[in-house]
Every structure is written in C-alpha cells, then in structure tokens.
Image (cartoon, rainbow, N blue to C red; front, side, top):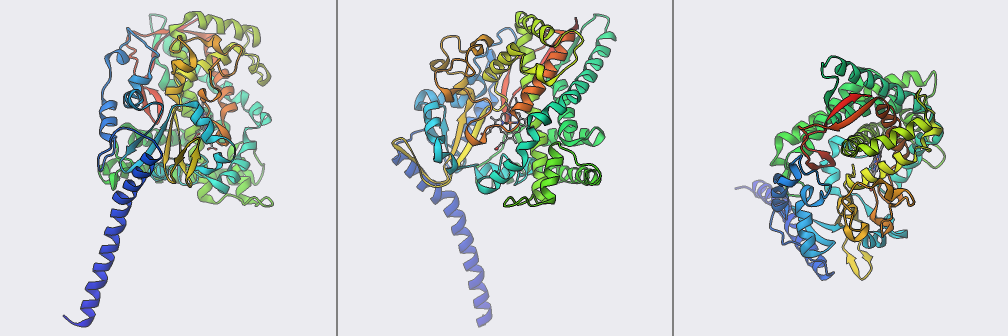
Length: 520
Ligand code: HEM
C-alpha cells in the first residue's frame, strides 16, 4: 500500500471514528450524564431502558381502551386515567413532578401548579425554549419558523407582527363572515334532516364542525373562499394522521427510520402544502398591491415587504411557516371545543335550554349578530370555560431548559424537556374539590378561574408570554357558531356514540361525536 492510500484509509477511519463517537456521545453518554444530574437534583421517575426510554409503557397505555372509557353507558368525565394511563400510573408512584424518558430525551413531567408558577415566573420565563426533539419532528406541520416553535428574539419579532391581526377592530370585521359560513352549514344540515323521514338526523358533529372551522379560518384570516382552502385543509388533516395517529419513536436515536413510510408521507404532504400556500400568497400579493387587507395574511405580507424600524420583516420561508401554523392551530382547537360542547349539551339538555334563553335575550330571534353582543353571552362563556377544563383542546404544553434553571430547591439541567400535563391539573380533585369530574359551568360564574384553588391550575389557553395569541378569536368564533346552531337545532346523544377521549396532539373523540340533531 502506497503512502497516499495509507493516508486515505487513515482519513476514512478518522471520519468513521468521529461519526461513531458523536453518535455514542449524543445517544448514550449525554443521556447518562443528564440522568445522573436529574437524580442528583432529587427528581425520581419510572426506570428507563435503552433505547426506548419509557416509550414501551406509553405505547402499551395508548393501545388499551379501558372499558369504562369506551362505553356509552358510562360517559365519565374522569378522563385522565383513560386518556393518559401511563401518566396517571406514574403520578401515583412518583408524585406530580417526575422524570420520564422518550427514547434518550429526558422529560420533566409537571402537574403541580405551584411548580409551574415557580418555573414560569418573572425572568425565568425567558429561559425556556421549545423542545428541539419536537421541532424537528413537526417540521412538515409547522415548519421551523411558526410562532409556536420559534424562541428568543425571533419569537418576539413574529409575535409583534402578528398581534394586530387579532385586534378587536379586526375581530369585529370578521363577525359577518363567520356567521355566513355557519348559516350555510345550517342549511346543509336542514337539507339532510328534511330528506330523512324521521325528522331528525344522526350527524358526526366533530367532523362537521371541523370542516366548518376550516372554512372559517381560510376565509377570515387568509381571504380564501375556494377549492384551494379545502385542498389545503384536507392535506393538513392527512398530515395530522401520518404524524400523530400511529405510534412513532420520537426521541429514539434514528427513530424516524423505524416509521419511514409515515415520515416520508409527512414530508411529501409538507412540501405540497408549502406549494399550495405559496400560490395562495402569490395570488394575494397581486390583490394587495391594489388594496391592502387587514387580515392575518395581509399583516404578514405587509411585514414581509417592509422592515419596520428595528423590527426585521419576514422572509418567505417564515411567511409560509406562519401560514401553516395558523391554518392548523386556528381551526382544529376551536372545532374540538365546539364538538365537546355539543356532546356535553346533549348530555345536559337543561344547559341547552339555558343557553337558548340567553341567546334569545342577547341576540334576539332574528339572529342578527353584532360583535358587541358576544361579551353579553355570559353563560355561554361559563360553558366554554367548563368544557375547556374537562376536555382541553390543547391537553399539554412543552418547554425545554436553555441553561441550568433553579426552581425552588431543585436545579433543572440545561436541555431538559418539560411536559406540562394540563388534563391532570384540570381533573385534580385537590384543586377543584369533590365535584371535579362533573359538568358544572356555574363554577365559573363568580371567578374566571372556576374557583380553582391555584391560579396556575387552570390554563386552557396556556400561560405567561406564550399564552394563545388566537384566544379572543377562538372565543368569538365559538360564541357565533354555537349561538346560531343552538337557535336552530336540538342535540341528543346517539346510541352509536362511544366515549373515548384520546390524546393525539390534541384531545380528540376517538370515534367522533355522533349526535341526533333535530330542528327546533
Ligand atoms: C379553543 C381554542 C384554542 C385553545 C384551547 C388554544 C390553546 C392554546 C394553548 C394552550 C397555547 C399555548 C401553548 C404553549 O404554551 O406552548 C396556544 C398557543 C397558540 N395558539 Fe391557541 N388555542 C386555541 C385557538 C387558537 C386559534 C383560533 C389560533 C389562531 C387563529 C391559535 C393560535 C395559536 C398560536 C399561533 C399559538 C402559539 C403562540 C406562541 O407560542 O406565542 N390558537 N393555544
């Protein structure tokens, strides 16, 4: 072997060794070090194994559908142990704050509002980012630059640009459009019922309302009222299924190769969605040059065109990622809140009547909506709060430590992920009292926090600076849609309904929400 070949072989061996060392260091040494640090800080938790961490137990828990949770006879709102059985079990053994592992990624589980308060308070709030492991996993869905994924100065800049899109004057301007779309849906339902000799129809209201909420976000925030919006929403739904419906190996080294088909499918859909959004953006750019628009897309485009003082404008990539984020976050959460509400109202006809009376009083029988009326729908507000307590559309929040962070007498090491279990806190008897699992909207009549014993125990829209940017829009849409459909139809539980709230990114009804719908 000549000198050149020896050098070449040595170089290849060196590169191979460096790659092997990096892999070993990232997948084995770093997690061992993190494990030791967390133990030293006093955190306990279920014993992990390599390379799955605790995913095995989580996967088993997800496959089980406890008979009580799935039956219609016993529709129980005590959903924590049925929808997140592994967390419920671990809580019994390790308390409300403990460590578990997704692959080689450590997660600090938090279901203690006092701990949440201490970790998110004041300056500390800025030391938290979003878990890198989810950022890369969810790229096809939210991109790298959507508001819910970015952090630091980029997050401040995007939030500053987007906030005005949800000002009350903008929301007011969307009222008619939301009402129009809802009235069209009402016409469709009426046609289905009329064609049915029984004078009623069984409709899966989750499916129906998700389609409606998709149309609404497309129209009000992006000015799209055509086939392009429908195709985009269908692709987002398909992406949701490929990313979240099946078991995946997030956090496991090279885990994406274990579910290669799903990973490739999600990436393909992600590229197609980007392409569709770019064509929607281009079409809007032509209109904007003639007449500026003040919806979300209008604001984002304006921010792309100009740098405002110290605030840098948005790049095309950032613009596309924000559109993806808002398309998804802006319809799925509200649709679920309305679907769970209709289920609860079907189970509690007295509250259906109560709300109809309020709608008649505030809006009148002609159903001519005005933005200012919505704030006067007080009881509807209590119902929304109670539904989001029992069935929070966003069942958890996640963070990642940027540096070692002291919380009370414990230190959370740099790069530790945090999983805040909202469902657990919203169903904690110690915080809500003996009737914690009962539907009691009146608990919100005197107190915005529903008399929860701790201010941070009720967080349906998140907490701190990262609080949901679309919450006023969500409340507005919820009240308009619900007022219109409750004024036209009554709802009762269908015999085919099976109660199985399931965690799949959001908190969803696994078998939809089939209800019997009758015109009033
Ligand atoms: C009932 C409806 C909704 C619920 C329950 C809800 C819940 C939440 C929660 C809990 C967070 C905080 C997540 C975290 O801390 O990491 C959040 C953030 C967010 N929400 Fe909502 N949301 C709803 C509706 C909406 C709507 C209608 C939009 C858009 C039009 C929207 C857009 C967003 C965005 C972009 C973020 C990220 C904010 C940031 O990180 O600065 N949400 N939402």
